[in-house]
Image (cartoon, rainbow, N blue to C red; front, side, top):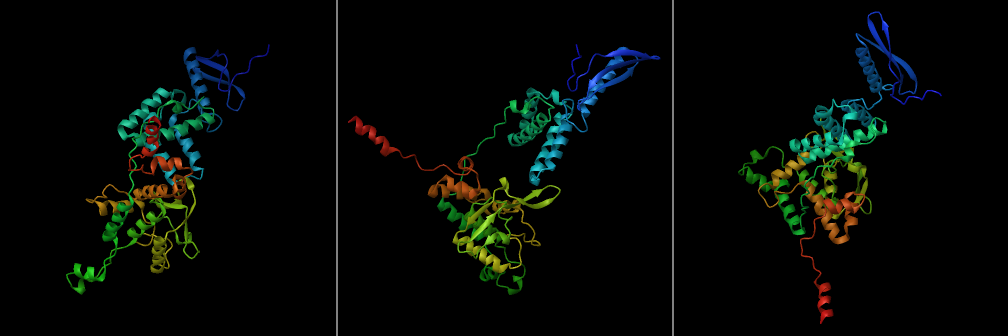
Length: 400
């Protein structure tokens, strides 16, 4: 009867011999390329030689063919291999940064030395729970997502039979109530923003200078933040998409003026501000309301040589979305709108469109593939009581 073929990574019966004072252990081993080879190791005793031989088998399994990931690979090695695969893909810089940060700050320090075969759902659950306690559920969700991607790749590479992260429970992220501005609040907010951000008139500047014309020197207050507010109100764009808008994507001379939204500005540590494809890589052609058209025409006339529509005040480079958020925080501190962020305007646009044209139209405006995301995270539930009285009155009529 022919000898049964060894499986990949398996070895046959260990045999022993002597080489002078040393003991030699040897066995047939089937490598990851399918070839069966004789492997030997030496030691001061039979048991030491056998132990050394088994270590050689583990090393061969770990190495695989070249850089193969196997069950004997460490989670740190898997992380490096997975990140290299991600770097070869056309991913957003922030996605790469978030993967690397999760690996370096959490996964490698806590799990890096474990072999893949040792990564049980129980061990990983304990690790994720620890990240939740120390860094919060948001960070834990991100780390779990990266770890799941790593083990999904390991499963594709036949290093693990299944993804152990899939058997863990994701941390619960508290869902804050959706809050948008009502139409009256939107009008009041815009009036307050005008007081804070609009450039001073000559009369105001003279008054601030105590009537002394010689003290009028220096730059007037920039209107750009106020213009960005109007753009966000008129489009529902993400706050990072406004500074990502270039003049080549603005079409004011068409019969129905419109803009193409397909870029955003992101801050990537070590690289600075970058203009990248917008989130979800959705491309939206949005028609503009009249007040936004007027604002853009004014800006085009004021800055005829500009490349970006809302550049930085310093040197005309990219404007940081974080600076926009900071301007909001300072402007509305101590007012009824102190809770508001730039993203609130996106929720407001979604809620207003939903009230007039439905959630499907709101989803299209925001660039969502379906209105499920829009309704779950952007449309504020109606503040009015549910009015089904006229329907329920039928019960009383039938019972009379």
